Length: 336
Image (cartoon, rainbow, N blue to C red; front, side, top):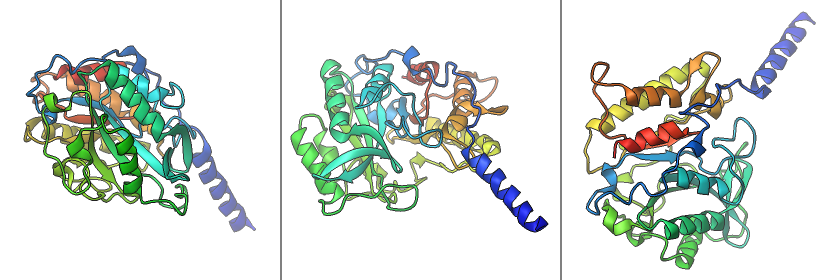
């Protein structure tokens, strides 16, 4: 009887740990203050000959994930149907991470795992088109991933539909002037463009399948090895097993940031500052929790530090953020 009670207590404790919300740090200039940044035209002044790879670009991980609770939400909620995306673009975000489910009618709906994010791919494309129409000097980099694996905690694609790539091609054909053509050609990957060729356009960086593999040759040629997690030009150690492991995630982000700063300027580096697990919510990894410094405030401090502390950063590459603050966005942009 005692053993059974002990097991029950352990089970209840584990359930409480999993279900209880974590206490994340308050909003500051690095975290949950996106609307304090206003950079709708930051690319406009850069020379046309500037390689996209040379830029320091703020991005968002799971760009549209604003519903589903503490383990699913990764961004501040500025509204459904793409309103959150629009707010990010106005703040200066220029790389987005879109996760799509195959829905009936050969359409995409936007999900994070099993949770529908009250937006469809048409909403995404319309918001991108509206923004670039109003700000033709800008470009937006897109990572598109098929979200559904059919496993527990994930979603399931609707049956009887066309393939993910065929559905995407149909969207492109309806928005042909929105995309930079070489990046959305299934058979041939694109070389790294300069800004002059892509102003007013969406550049597809990569299309990933449900388990991370690259789909066909969509996107940029340098990302032929972008799978689930890390690759040559991508740091995406997304498993942060507990709050104490946030320190490890900070170090992974820092090391990749240093490698980017010293790396090949003709290559784009994508550094995911995000992470989560059952015992570490996205908000806690980003903002900190229970005395542990989050990745976002760490990044802002590190980028501010001078040569007396460490070799200064000269290029951040793309930094994919959860709950970015306006000060952190502005700091990344300052390296341009």
